[in-house]
Length: 346
Image 1 (cartoon, rainbow, N blue to C red):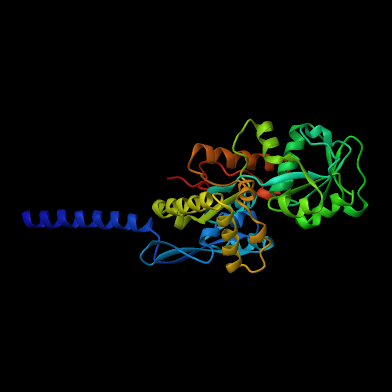
Image 2 (image 1 turned 90 degrees about the horizontal axis):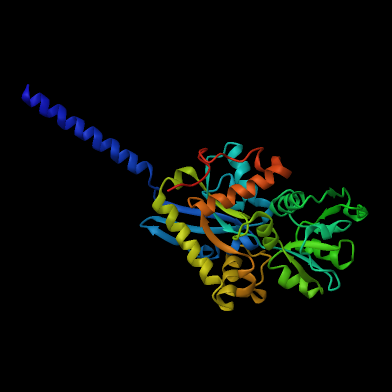
């Protein structure tokens, strides 16, 4: 009887040990190569250190980056191990059933308003009443951000169905769109639009080469309107939930990305190298090594802020709530609750 009791006790211990081991193993990534997919442009700068090279987390476990056309990121992100996406896309994927977590904000706004030299600087959005404003990112963060800011400032806006036939509405802001900075800039140069909203590096390169000047820092206007300091959650890192369960793996990636973010603003040489790295994995990148400087990248606000921090969580939810008010379908109809499993926690 005594022997039987001892055997049962040993069996119980073995089962507990096996159970614990199983729990631990479930929270560890398997051996293999994992890929972060990022869209071309400023978000790609956040992963430039992993473009053309790999981060080796442990024996048999590595991480590298791929860069794709911005138009492809929505479809690629849904199946990727990890991806850099606009904050609204992350929420929409989750609300539509994708088993992902938002891990961190990686860019905190790179949008600026440009205009001709004789156009007044914009310090108050009421100045835009009766003007036509051209913007990139229809239906995405730039568009939703601007609409939310106008709404908060109690400035009405209308969207012109045909930009070519757009006429400024009295007492309102008339919005027209371009696919990218290259499409918005001519609308301002020709006088079709009084102002254009575009992102870096187009502000410091293409826009200035056409004689346009910066008239407003959209991040500063957002901070002023919302009582914040860090800008807004423009592009975020998402990850399959199964990978994010390995906290050590996830935080190691964030550390690598922050090291890269610090490096690419430390000198013009490193800034140019960042773009060269991107070019090795995406030949068609819109970024040009010869035009890239550390100061331009600084204006792209690449900084890794974990969703596990109070600052990071607040920034993401504030952005999504702003988008919800003006374009709910772009986030899947609702802001994911803090206990929904959407936000990465340590």
